[in-house]
Length: 383
Image 1 (cartoon, rainbow, N blue to C red):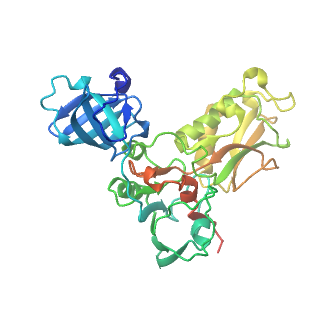
Image 2 (image 1 turned 90 degrees about the vertical axis):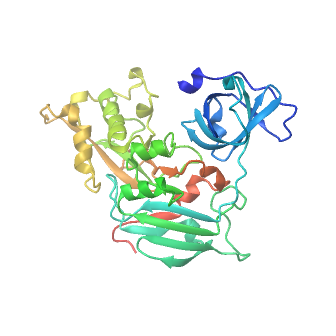
Image 3 (image 1 turned 45 degrees about the vertical axis):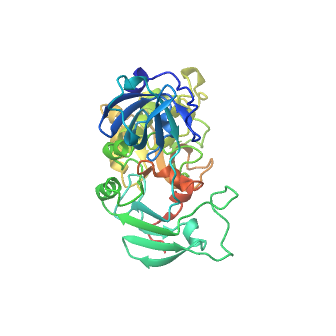
């Protein structure tokens, strides 16, 4: 990796540096005029707006403001004082940094899928206010089919926060929520800075917008959005089990479904999917089935049923189903699910929430789960 190859040793503290700052394991790799690029090992905490101090031994030669962070490795910055033009060996400079001085967010602009955007697992008739809106925290001042504008109530009797943090998070004074019927329009709005963050159905967000926004990893994790539902699996004629049939072909097919159709946005739950099971850990003989004896079926309620079945069964397409073939049925279950005739939960369905670079830190204690909960999916036939 470029960042790893160009790492400098830890910067030594500068006695002349009056501001509270931290050493940054980084190295200047290019500079011209007021632009400078640094390769860094520990830049994951750095966001645009952070202040850099570049020192030649104990002498400050320049300060700069971070303008972009690429994949947690490369920092782009603009020199705000001093100059690097007279530094003969800029790669030998030591670097210190201070967090960005971020002003509170007064207006938060968010994008959400519109009613016409259908996910392979589910469809929505429209958007409904979630707990953070329906509990009286905000009041609507403008509402159309494509946008909501809300302002925060200031009365003392405001309900308790929904984040579970035990303290009032710094909720913005104004929320502007936009609903996009075309995923490309939402991506363009995010890239142009017309919205601060965008929620996407699983698999929707393109590789381009994920790279452009520096979005890394899946939506799982304690601070990520809660599961909007689950994908469950059950073998025809058998009760729900704590495990899937001992078939690596089944595991590979489900992993490929998540990778190829959902861009890895589904969070695996079953040990068979996350690598926790070994061939010797196969379930009891009564549920262990040979590869050729299983075919997949997807619940007809899933809009992407046919595409999902083609992908899941593509390795079995050349086989002629025998009378003894058994079926592994997949279905989407909204909300929480436990062991039931619906089957074993194999994926948690979470929606990627992609932020403009550097913006997420400005929300402080508001976690992604609370942002996700601002809008709920109104089911077809619902109010």
